[in-house]
Length: 187
Figure 1 (tube, rainbow, N blue to C red):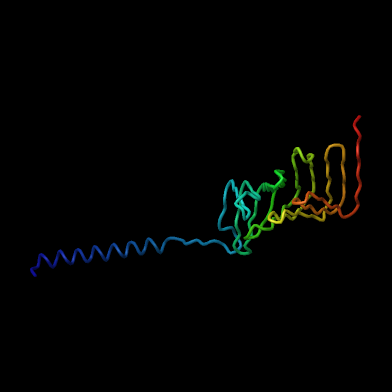
Figure 2 (cartoon, rainbow, N blue to C red):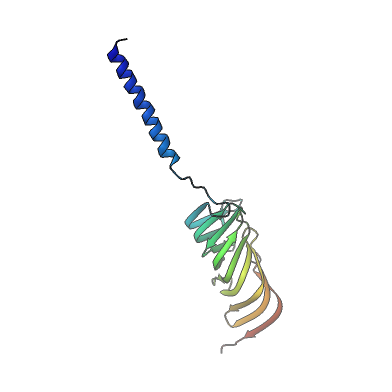
């Protein structure tokens, strides 16, 4: 090997070593961030979750303006949740609130704050409107309940009570206490 080749190899070795040192310095200067154990690690905008029954038909649907996942307690926060429970009869129950939370399986949804429940009028049933708060919904079982005050209106009647258990599958509503009602006859 002549002197010229030794100088070229030496320069190449110096260049490789210098480049490695430069890259190492750049990487060590970066600040690494990680998700907080109590903070959110994922979110979805305009969520639309559809759940099918065993026959492949749409059973219920959960929509939300935003869904945020918190890994520390495996909780999902929902902004403006809108739950639609579809019945075999063709009726649809629509349950909305400003905020909600659900577990990882989304089989229990806790609607927080004011809750609005509606069923449209169909050939077999009249329109129904329920206003309450802090409602626990089990969409797969087509059940919902609260211990809070509720107002139910449909056509000419209005019923108020405390504590409601709704069985959407069987179209039954149970008011637990302090029940008062009014029926206005329209002539």
